[in-house]
Amino acid sequence: MAIDFEIPEDAKAMRERVRRWVHEECIPAEKRLVDRESFKVVLAELRAKARSQGLWSPFIPKEHGGMGLGPLANALVQMELGESHLGALSMNSQGPDDATMLTLLAHGTDFQKEKYLKPLLNGEKRVCYSMTEKAAGADATGMQTRAVKDGKGNYVLNGEKWFSSAASAADLALVMAMTDPEAPRHQRYSTFIVELPNPGYIIKRDIPTMAAEGPLSHIMGGGHSEIDIKDLVVPAENLLGGEGNGFNMGQHRLAYGRLRHGMHNVALAQRALDLAVKHVTSRETFGQKLSKRQGVQWMLADCASELY
Image (cartoon, rainbow, N blue to C red; front, side, top):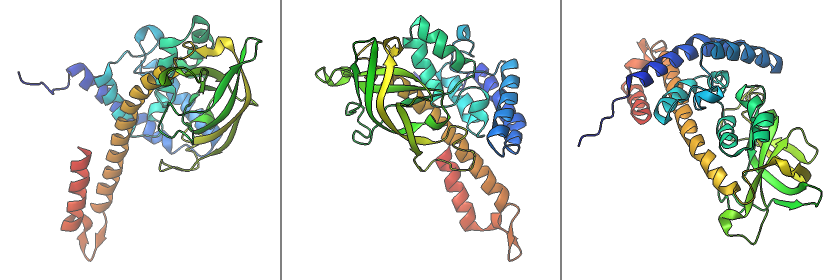
């Protein structure tokens, strides 16, 4: 039986709608960004307009205020949003908030959904996810941050975190820590909701990476922080999903995040290629456009084929 690779008409229509939004609203708005205050003003205006048009949290079910898109339609939407640094933010679809919202939606208690999830769904707060550690690297079962009960209805966390994306812009953090070192590897860790700022959650610095860097990138949540966790007290009611379920919840959210990351990078690459094409079709050297140079044509063709 043949496989049908045709994109459904409703998904195509949504992609075109979001493409117009990004090109008519988000990219022009980028020129208005100069500092933290202008970012707040511009983003608030974009979000109000997007929400009024039903362009809000594509991945969140409709009963929770989102658009309820499936994986294919959402992937296409994310590919359009990634073309502008304001795209995902304008529709409350930015990482790492998006995947963390899904985690809270799937595993949060009624109390946690009301106090922590609702402001995230409304775009009123930002959240980061503190899992990765220097000693463990990509091994999520190698984390050493510990969470110990204090006998007073709290957990006390101590350790360190590395590459906590958007921590410097966040109001909340989800922190993974070891609660039972004797349990099987994938059941040793639990996840805690931490309100920020907090004296026990110390942001030491934003670590330079290969990600886009600029005067506004960290303000917009593009930083990746090094964190010291020292005697961080977390109420037991802020334990998310029960003890020992941190690893499984982490893998669930990472699966969604990989979809968004991939599509955003496709969009950024497309915008870079468009800028290159604009340059070579207008720039002349020795009486001829760069676009007429065969070597330049080869480079653009390679870029286009790899992007496709």
